[in-house]
Image 1: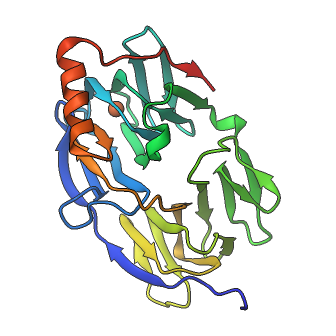
Image 2: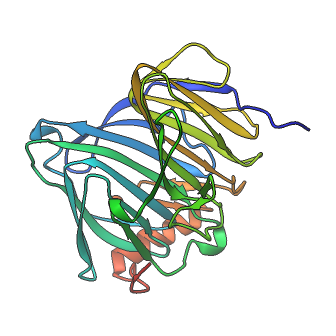
Length: 288
Ligand code: FE
């Protein structure tokens, strides 16, 4: 079979939601309309220069059974957890957190003149890894490899591989490919995405056309692709930026309750019970 370019299956307009202690977000995965896109469970886009939209942040809350990937575009988010780990992620930085069996943490956007901007994505863990040891990977912007095409498109590799460059996040069950793409006006890219993997692009700036479709998608928008071997993108006259994410679907049952995502209702009940009796934290996280 010759390589085929993935076609746009669906364009989803993010829905406004209020989360945490009062943070205004745009959510495109994890909504009544699109519960999940196996193995992606949630996608939130935060962007505001008004402190009232974000300063309340996400005070202490638990997670179990998932990975959370936070991509900061601008501003700063301070992070700390119940075991005394703390850090700060700023513009260009990424935190890839494996909650595994359980973590209690706080994510607090800092009030800055430039406001806050970025994405948070939840990636499911396979059943056999849901109760694994928590782990952090804090990726500073400068640690990420970036490649530039002849016509000026810039591709930052977060996970997986592009043009011979391998991103720092490797070895996960769902084999994620995450690349952060900035397209100047008129530029195009073609990225290889394994056949059978779920794939989407989240356009958070400008206008981008995908596949053979001439119709540009204007930010903010989630673009879900049909199956195929590559994703092709070209920028509109003002340029554009998007996160391209692909991963192998797990095909496992999903039982979700807020920040817990397990396979069965009984496992959710167990998480709630563990939280009530103070057995939620099983293992100390390790840094990746
Ligand atoms: Fe969280």
